[in-house]
Image 1 (cartoon, rainbow, N blue to C red):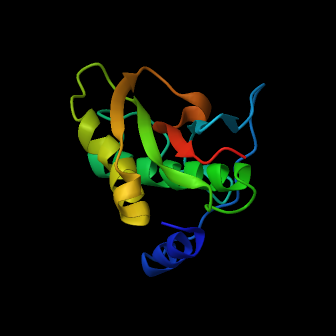
Image 2 (image 1 turned 30 degrees about the vertical axis):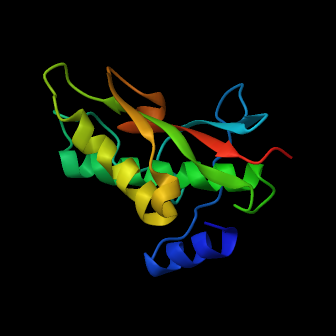
Length: 158
């Protein structure tokens, strides 16, 4: 998909890319090495606040987690677009997604939470959004987030 198609698809889905999040520590949002773009872990923000903070299995439902994962994936697309010069023209596809999930030790629905990110990427990018994935449980995440999404994408080298 090209930049115009992705923008049109976002519009059809009623989605808008949020402003790229500024790093909260000593890292850069995206590192491009050759034909690979590594998007740093993104937490879901809405109006400057973390969406659905907390832990799955404690104070959040699977649906809350999936919603947060989708928003974090949208945040990752925003960071990627900015790193690619404000356009998706160089994007070839999403290769890998890692979804970190703040959860209680007995929580077992990690794949359902991670599906929020995977589904969003597939809806926006079509076949180019299909990817390998890991869904990983964590005791806690930065800023009290319930999920954090890291993305590896294939891009045309600059």
